[in-house]
Length: 228
Ligand SMILES: Nc1ncnc2c1ncn2[C@@H]1O[C@H](COP(=O)(O)OP(=O)(O)OP(=O)(O)O)[C@@H](O)[C@H]1O
Picture 1 (cartoon, rainbow, N blue to C red):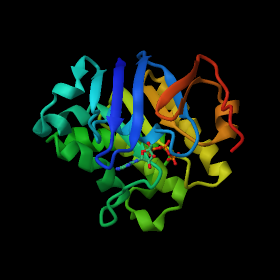
Picture 2: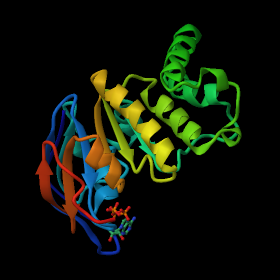
Picture 3: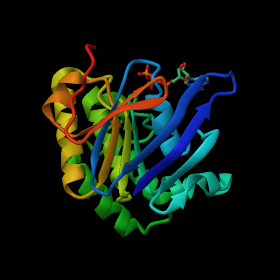
């Protein structure tokens, strides 16, 4: 499903963010990516959705080698991945419904399919009753639920999240995790970079720890392993 072979990433300023990453993530897995600040977690995640291009090495997702993808094909490749960020990245002038529908409009789905799929995912994230609201009328947790709905409305086989609970209070973070668990239970692969020790130690999943751009630990049922 996701395979990284000897992946290196040096930023133009000379910072070596990834230093030889080898990893295989199978279909349906739930993987936390943990590690100290500056360890390379975001870079790892960004390479996975082709926001950054590795300096060396290959990343194969669902049979597509990202190194061989041309710039103009990137949007097409990204449609096979749901991506979720700490700061939600919703479009402020669009309603909840429109934010989610947008992902389907760009691929020219029929209005009927769009309506069905949007209502289905809004139901999953329990926001059907807020479909007509705008992002700034929602709480942080609700905004994150919209962003999750948007990321999965295309039914991508993999969801990649960078600190999805980073801006949320602890209780809301747990609610968001319930949604990720549900998405994963439906067969979607989930890769999540996080600093949330409580969550990693309670909802036990595979843990990949990165330090200094290298994988230093990879455990099937791991714990957070750091003090922060
Ligand atoms: N665009 C960039 N240009 C140059 N250096 C960068 C860039 N992005 C990240 N870095 C550097 O690469 C290293 C890894 O950063 P990265 O953001 O991947 O770490 P991280 O583990 O996600 O950190 P955090 O937990 O603080 O988010 C750091 O030294 C960082 O300063």
